[in-house]
Image 1 (cartoon, rainbow, N blue to C red):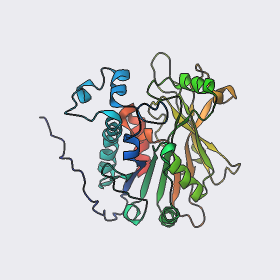
Image 2 (tube, helix red, strand yellow):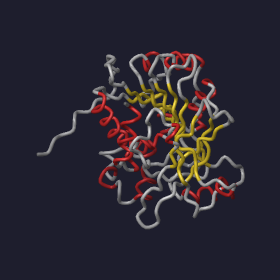
Image 3 (cartoon, helix red, strand yellow):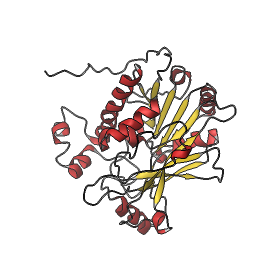
Length: 336
């Protein structure tokens, strides 16, 4: 029997979720201006998302059933942005099934131009807040002091969790030859030679005193024959929260950020998981002797901050790049 998917709504105000013992309320906050991303000049080669025509050409024929008809799906950059929303649905549904609570997706500035900073409207009915840093730096998104204060108040609540997910930072060098080396390393034709993400999440990290920077766009290692992901290197002795119980790998994405620690203090911040890098493709980071990148960080509750902070890339919650049982177990662990 064919079961129709639930009816979809848009342009609705959020209905507050009541606290339920043992059932976390998860919220996603996309730290971008949708209009700023969608309206980028497509003649600019760098620091923008692909148009839907570019996606269709590079991925042909994967998206033809969805996007070939302009009466059925958005063209331009907007169409590519909508692919993100479609790919987050399985995680939203999974979290809903696990917790009994729907998972709202907020945008800093949405399609209709409505602005929503992180404040009590987002935080009052949230236990786990996921901030996806998918804003291009050129659009200059930054957290206001009031947002930093609101997050500090949120994290003063026992049992809260803030998941920060700045995406990659490709092409920081002014040397075009180095940018080309980085591009050849990850190998994604849809990523320009410079694509710098995460200005908003970086401003949050600065305001909250989190000593981390998102760097590079690194290609994870895979088995040459089976294409299976190389297992994560997990510091299980430090994982007292159980984030990695039953987890061996994440999903595959061609350009993942390295969450670089800018402190020597390893007591307040733990690198729980590292991802092996594809060493067959040169990159300045691996040329310096590195073979893995930091894929998951955990800042346990500390002092006045009663909530935890974690860092992991937003692609881990997107099914554009697949979702196996190991990944779903990670989803379960992070929202339980």
